[in-house]
Image 1 (cartoon, rainbow, N blue to C red):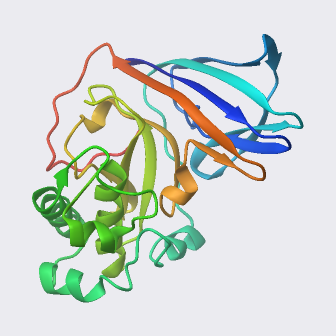
Image 2 (cartoon, rainbow, N blue to C red; image 1 turned 45 degrees about the horizontal axis):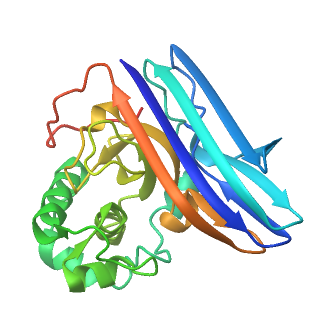
Length: 267
């Protein structure tokens, strides 16, 4: 399968702003080919962001701007084949059962046990996906960036990050390691960066998408982490910025059929 993905960003920054972008396809081994281009300009001049390696094959592209600036970013990648996620280590499996800022598994522990009883492993993962899908309504713009899994459950609506946070929290509450992954998702409507959950069962990470808005088989990993605080596509590390425009594209030459009941690894 060949996938063509990209993102265009436009933003303004204040003086002395340091920012990090997570928009590039993860550098996991196994792809037949991965051709990409990242162009960052300001005032007609090309800028050279530094690349920093993150976990799970993710990459940050970092800019440090001393003067206020208007910045344009264009990223494009053509990817053939499927990548191989890095194997999990023991520290990782401990980290991803702990509660985090947006996946408050400690507060949802009674809910998870009451709803899912003695279920475990792949059966639990599928039950959580189906329950979250059935309990929440996908409503664009319905949640705040500060909402976590508890708030999402109370309001019974949200966007992809909210669905994923709730699934992750419910799985962690039952001691299943779970994390958030940011992906490009061919077939997604409305098109945007997409957030899904990954659960560690049967010795591997498997992806679940409680929104059901795109086929998992064509998704491409950008990065992964405890929750969306680790996977934001654009963030400041000093200074401030204002996002003016964001356009995301993701296409596949052969969009696969989706079977939500099948365990599937994220490419």
